[in-house]
Length: 252
Image 1 (tube, rainbow, N blue to C red):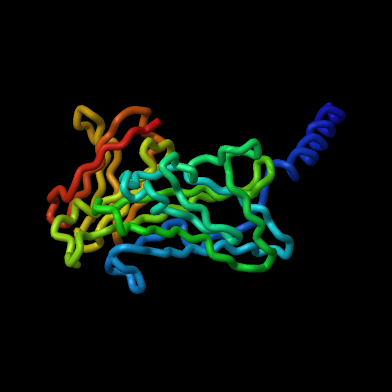
Image 2 (image 1 turned 180 degrees about the vertical axis):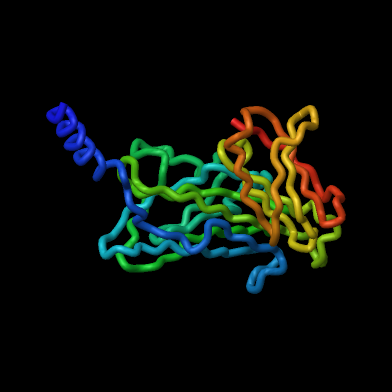
């Protein structure tokens, strides 16, 4: 029996270093939110929005990335209107959604080397000079250490574009973002702080309440691990108990 226990302990000691990967990079923000126009330095046509990647250790780290989810309208994507810049290069989207995959034998990610002990920008850029769609939309990018099983982290850019010469959003429901969709363990909801949202309720398709969340500010992270797979509705309620907006999502 002692021999078996010793073997198991040795095996665990052998496996642990290769399984428990440390956090080798950090990002300044999990979610970057901005409006066009409205955010300082951003016009009605173009945007350059920055997040930062920091390598806390002294050694350089190869970070791979690609887009994993987005609800950008078609005219925000075509003609290379949308791009992402890592520390080395800027890569624009094309009509074949280049940023969603890498059509080479090297894999499905773009890879960039980040110097140890340094902070570098990881940026999203938009040129909407020829785009007419307005509203709030998002794109999520997965960053990962470029080694098997390495540390990974998604970041989301949320962009709200108002019609020209309109500075106030008259319908709070127009500025609601729900992602990812489909979802697994959690759903993120971002909404206008002026909408006075106090409660978020998840319903199934027959109207049964599945979860109730009390919220503040302009965003909420909804844990849906206890919710069975299926189609659900999210309703945002204000302090008067009125429904601000309803959104639908799928739990995988």
